[in-house]
Image (cartoon, rainbow, N blue to C red; front, side, top):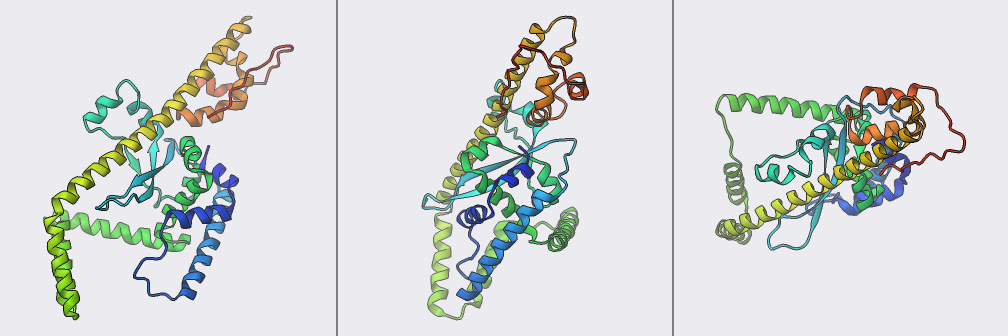
Length: 329
């Protein structure tokens, strides 16, 4: 199922509810009043409804290399662990996933550190995102509203309007160019050094003596427990990675099984109507209904050219013969 088809099925109110449950929209140090927050939440609901209509009405673009969007539920890395989870989203190239996620080589590739390339969707246009596939497994596991909410959350990361998004994306690209230039010149900045400098500035600028002393002691405690927190964080990240790999592998395994079922029916139909007819002629009724969906599920280029052309041939009927149809996953 494509993202555009997914948005056609959902209710804007349910998507907004899922959005507010899955993500924090107001942070602890917000200085806005309660009235302002209520107004902002209402504005967000309005933008969600308008964006849903935008996805439904836009001209979805289908690229040469098909992508599938996955939604992941991940454990938080805070310590001590409090059982919190967050949600992330990535797009995976189908053709690469089909090569890398085969059951016979999956574990070996994982041990070797080979990972499936994935990308964010926040810099893609609405038309491109609408043409991507959405993992059927994620839709079943999290629900249609949650999947749409997460897509919108990432889509809104650079702004709510096309002009705002394009402005912020352009600004980011300029900053990345500047960073690449500084790296090429040997001007490297390490995160640990930047964090340490930030803490020093916060402590130096603190005017409350009690708060200043508390910040100094808290920073010393962070340094003493850094190894414990780091070990816990790595364990959680590895577990999240394993769960993500399992979800992606199961999605493409489901597609592979669907392909095998379709091909078995194709061979059966070819055996029933083997009166000198070609394979694609005997199966034209089945593939006339399902060939586009099947191609979307298995990625472009899997089926041979003759089969892909079969939908353009005249549909043939066979009296007293029932055509078995398999509902796509």
